[in-house]
Image (cartoon, rainbow, N blue to C red; front, side):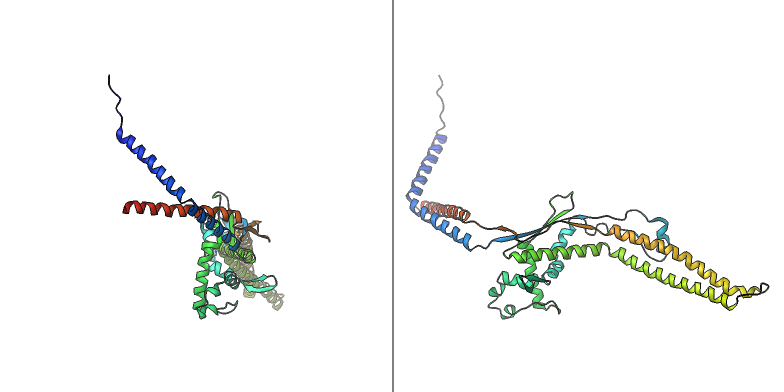
Length: 354
């Protein structure tokens, strides 16, 4: 009868693992007071951090963006405008579609424009950039740099090179830590703009200003071409109307000069006929221009995107604070984990050296 074959290597490996585990358990148990001390220290540090850590306020604006293009041709009404080099149709498709509008919020131009706006902070008028510098105590960190420490921003005047550099750094910090722009559902045109800051008033004012700036710029850019066309058509219509009025006055004056022309002399009819031709021509042009002008107004209305505010930040803002219990648990866990890790590394090092 065959005897069962035992895998002595497997038995030995399992035995070594068990012995190693018992050895480690005994070692850590012998160091339990040290681990406990570091756990208590970590818990104290966690509670201290929760007390020192300032709460973060979140200002959130939610709005829906509805775009409508003119779509299709304006037909016969665009004929006269096309002859004059004016385009009535053509929405700016692709200009700020998709994710482009999100990137617009993060652009330096929009953020700097918002930072250089003045806000009312409990009765005190202050530029948002100055409020940001005070809230984050940047001048204290610039104490060893007199040029930065004494820098001031105003609404008027051209920015200096130093001011531009400071604004660049602030814009980077805002994009990294403060401003978040998202579009949760790609199929919907609902956009969330969140501003997080330790300064509640700054968070709200900055959120309101950057949303207002971007939406205004967006509408102006989307309707720029249609607005220019409308202005040109209005100018042309007014010009033709003035010429028509002159033609009417010319016909009347010609008749007054020669009220009873001799029918046998055809040359006497020429001035009157010429004035009448001018009148009829200007009248026909004016009719077409008025039609084109009205269609241009329709085009402008259709190309103007509708921005509907769904929700806007209202004081007091949502506050996120690192709680004491959370600090106690996280600090205690980190203290225990790090002390155990250090002891483990130390024991391995001793075993290698021995």
